[in-house]
Image (cartoon, rainbow, N blue to C red; front, side, top):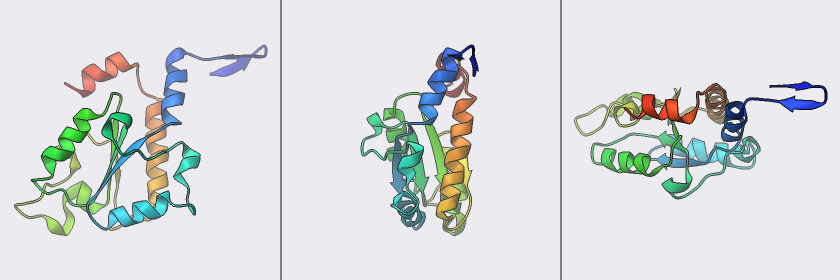
Length: 160
């Protein structure tokens, strides 16, 4: 992308990715203490809205799944159903040690991480991670979205 003779030139895919990265609508799924930290990060002191992140309550309006906390085996089909209801393209962030690996709750009744159910794009380690780590994850995801290939190619690779 660049400015040439007073005209802004860009590829269509770059323009689409620019719009996608600047308008993330997450579905937050908090089951433990990391959810409290995520709520603090979404409050006025840190202000997710300036990054174009607007939380939604229904998966059909969301393009980002944010998972905070432990995932029980009974909860896994629900998370998978929510993921399937989200329109493409969609992304996922696993926040905290429990959502990444199960942490201290690694028992027969819990999963070893969100990546057992859905493809995870960004991992935020910590117990519980600070709000600044959420912002870093958002910036990493936005950079990833900026570099994505056209949607048709991405869907074939990601959903197969």
